[in-house]
Length: 60
Image (cartoon, rainbow, N blue to C red; front, side, top):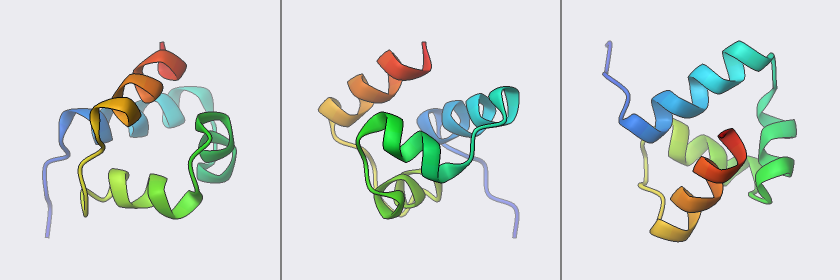
């Protein structure tokens, strides 16, 4: 099964690949739990607008 990532999940994955940052460190930097980050990356849930703003601010 090969799903296309939504825009925010794709931005997170690309940022992590480009900066060699594991989920635990990124979650810590975003002030999210690792579980919250995994749910957003796997598209099990969509981030709310506040979470999107935090992600965009931290990822640049």
